Structures are given as structure tokens and as C-alpha cells.
Image 1 (cartoon, rainbow over the protein chains, first blue to last red):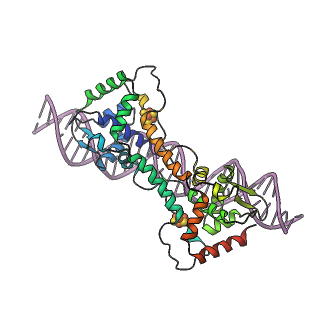
Image 2: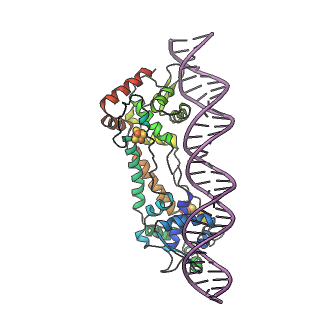
Image 3: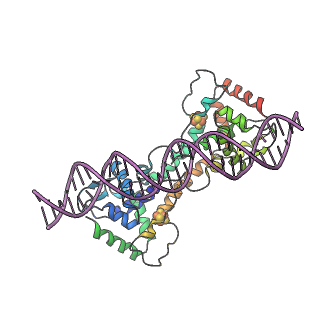
Length: 162
Length: 162
DNA sequence: TCTATTAAGGATATGAAATATCCCTATTCT
DNA sequence: AGAATAGGGATATTTCATATCCTTAATAGA
Ligand code: SF4
Ligand code: SF4
């Protein structure tokens, strides 16, 4: 069970978009080039972000993506769920229905304890992601990345932002 | 990102094994029949439990599986990790290496904040599963399942336990 | 108005992983 | 001796992630 790599891509792209000046857009092409990713495929991840309403887009030359909300109002969970989906990681195949001792017409009363416990763990994962804002990430990155690399990356992006 | 169905199978099988009297074994055949699962494929899940040391096995007629430890000493995490593996759900593709502004020979100092945050969420999921014992499940199941179905299932199993 | 550039999305190919079946071997019980 | 069992290798099938290509509509700028 592994998250799609698009999740990582989307998180990195949002981190870049968070540093964009007000009103500017950054294109798929620039984001793909910056991260060394296949442009067409990365585009699918960005479309997911767009469909989830996390980013705004505009067409034409100097078009691209920008965050739809301030970084403090975007959580990791928003981004992860946008590309990975909101489905639970534990799906119930209702194998108790096959119990040979089960009386005919016996009807299950909702999910069994196994499913409930697995879903609680799932929720704990989501809760942790919900607690981290995109602004928390950019702050952590600023501490993590050497100042000169941070600065030159910022300039590289600005040159290409429409 | 969805857990394999073998996870559900393994959890249900362990719940059955937890009700087995001391020293008795239950075969793959019986477990597969009880849950309506493909015997050969379920066998792979049980082998994973065996390799992880969660169950003991014995060969020959009246052979099969039994828990290697009391249900209070087996956690959900033990079982889930046995069949799903211990790998983290977020894998890092190191896309920051492709940053065009990155100075030559610049060497990363471990995982970046993105990975750290995702891994923390992963750990929260594991922590939740680690906190639930197999004995907690059987207690919950006893409350959840109608008494007569519980009893007849127990008898069905006992008839087939070697 | 014309042209270049862009996001959106449909179609399709490729690869890897989950799912499933089959068969052989060694062991153990009766 | 014979039957039943776990273990495990080989392989087929299906599903999903990954990746590419192409068309359309919108937009900016010349
Ligand atoms: S997990 Fe629970 S609800 Fe799902 S099949 Fe098993 S018993 Fe039924
Ligand atoms: S998640 Fe962090 S460590 Fe992994 S590639 Fe992205 S920047 Fe690098």
C-alpha cells in the first residue's frame, strides 16, 4: 500500500505556489521543469488540485496555477485527498456474509468491529495530516534549505511566473 | 491506496484462532470455507502470519494454525504488518534533486520536511493499530454478534479443529 | 485579428502490483 | 502405507499507477 508519487509532486508544487507573489501564476511547464517531472503527467495532478478547488487557474500565455487560498488555510490533508482521493484505505469485503452458520435472511447491522478499528486508524492518519498547514511546510522548508539555494530557487520561479 | 484484502482475511482468521482451545489447530481449508475465500490464496496470507511468528503451524492430518501468543499479546499492527509489510506508505522520490538551481555536489541532509510530515502521519496510523489487541477485537465481536450465531460458529470451528 | 501559449480532458499504451490458481515437496497423523 | 496438511515456486489474470499523445477552448500579446 503506497501513496501515488503524484502526492509528493502535488505537495512540492503547492509549496512552490505558496511562495508566489499575489496575483501571479505558474505554469505546468515551469513546475515540471523545476522538479524534473513529466509535464503531461504532472498536469493530471494539478488538475486534481484544481478540481478540488485548492488552486485557481487561468489560460493563455502567462497562465498557470496559483493557490486559491492563503497557505495557512490549506492543509496537507486537502492536498493529499485531492490527488489520492477520500476513500478509506481499508475496504470491507463483507466476508462475514459467507459464514456457513449464518441464519438465512440474517441482516448485518452496519460495519463490524474489524472495519471500525481499521477506519479509526485511518482517521488518525487523516487527523495528523489535517493538523499541518501548508504554511507550516514552507516555514519548515525555509529552515531546512540553505539560504542561497532557497533564494535562487525563488528567483528561478519568479522569472517564469506570469 | 487500498490495503490488500488479505489484511481483512488475516484479521478475521486471527479472531477465529483466538477462540480455539489450547493446543488445537485449525486448517487453511476450514478457515477458507468459513469465510468463503479461495483456499490457495488465503494460504499465502496465513503463510505471512507464520513467517512473522504470529502463528504456530503443524503438518499432517489435523494440522493447521494456532496463535503463537495469547490474544492479549497480539496487536492489530502485528497482523496488518505481517501481510501488508512494514514499508512506509509515503515513499520519497527525491525530486528535489532535480532542482535546476541546486549547486553541483550539493548533498541532501536527510529527508525533507515533506517526507517527515508524511511519515509522522504514517506513524500515527501505526500507533493506533498498535494500541488495539486481538483480545480487544474478540471482546468487541462477542458484543456485536448475536449470541446464537456466535455459539454455532464456535461449534462449527470446534468440529474441524485438529 | 492573428498567433502563440496555456489548462482541461479524452484516449491509449506500458508497467507493476494485487489477485488467483496450479502443482510439487516434506512432514505428520491415523 | 496412505491421507491430509503447510510451504512454496511458477504462472496466469486483473486492476491500478504511470506515462504519453492529441484535441479543444480560453487568453494574452503582437
Ligand atoms: S471487516 Fe467486518 S464488516 Fe468487513 S467483512 Fe469483515 S466482518 Fe464484515
Ligand atoms: S519529499 Fe522531501 S525528501 Fe522526498 S523528494 Fe520531496 S523534498 Fe526530497
